[in-house]
Length: 69
Length: 230
Image (tube, rainbow over all chains, first blue to last red; front, top):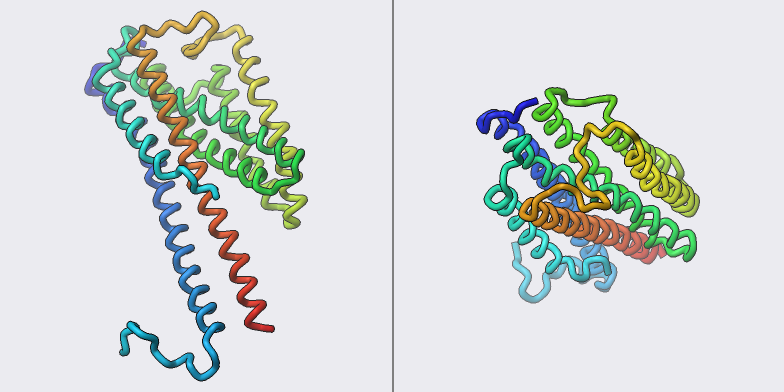
């Protein structure tokens, strides 16, 4: 087959590179979602650990620097 | 543990990817035969080489797991194969685009390089159902490792078989005589291989770090729940 003219070849080249970078972006988005989930779970676990450390009766008392609603 | 060196590695990957794109579009000349379409070669071939090497690396890591019993090697092997499957998907799509532009067809069934890559890709697609159909973690790691070793050994055999095949309609890039690329194309190609390899390693480490963090969280949750119920 003869070489395609630049305007037609450009579409194919752009298509190939877009596929490659789209896969990378999708992967980064999936990893970001995973990291967000890990952060949520970690926050939840820190809260559980802090509740366990607090003696009974102090659980509802706000600590220093904590905003009071 | 797995995140060690991830930041400099990520920076190096971004820099090298940028450099490789600059070389592809501003330094490497257009191919005399295919013209501008040949630029697809700089993304397609490095992806294919790195994906195949990733499959073999997964097999080597599986051997390390079976020899040592260290579960971290099983995780490394699994993630290497997982990444290679992602890269393999990109290889098949970019290859189909290149085939359409160069040959006028999205897929050519009598081309040994294309079909052999598809066979390897489909073989590794079996890895997921095999791995996740086994619930016992020890058996899962052992059986998956055996599969990874057998399939990993098949990859170089398959590559050699294609090289020995008679029909060569697919362009050969690497050969014992050094291929037929001029110096500036060769330099661009080597930089692209380095960039894609770094991308693979970065994604591999990132995935392992994420999986390790999830596992540590599960352990922490179990411990806290056990303490709470005690």
